[in-house]
Length: 271
Image 1 (cartoon, rainbow, N blue to C red):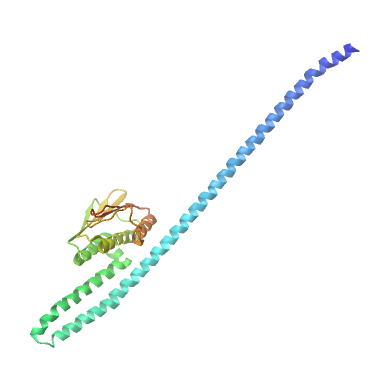
Image 2: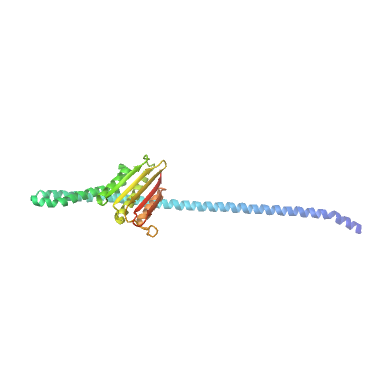
């Protein structure tokens, strides 16, 4: 009996060991497959999550660009309307006042006529300034006369107002804008800079340099005024407007200033 039992145990033990080995291999394979599926699921989920996040960011950027563009177009329409009002209404009133003054001069004695001269000259100069300003506010006029000529006209107008010099310097070969709306946006940025120079800088001289390179237009605008500490200055609407307009056309804007060293604006625009 013992011999039969020993024979049975001897024959069944290898079979049991092989079955356990196969079961272990099977369990390992199942574990590997489950792990792989979990990894694949996690990767797919993460990619989908990242794609959704990127889509949301792009949608937000597109929405902000649309808002900025709408604001810019609204501002341009407002400026155009103001330009029309200045040219048609204020200009006509000044022209009428100048004409009436000329009529009055013919009805007074010679010794009184000389007293009208300063007033008459002031009216004529005011009419000239109003008409010049109205042109710079109308984007259609700016596009019609051209980007460089518009800047030159604006500098000439400011020079007549208060500055000793206001220069425009052009370097390189001119490259036309592919999108002419960008001409208006850059011109408005420069107008904002020049307006700040008039109001705050106490500058005597202005300079704008247009440097045309094969793929980039580098614009440098500077004044020799009192400047400011750029690390402590609070951002006003003017600076915010310049930065938002620059971002709208994928341009890089940098403002440099120190106290008593004037202000320099550098705009890098990809042509």
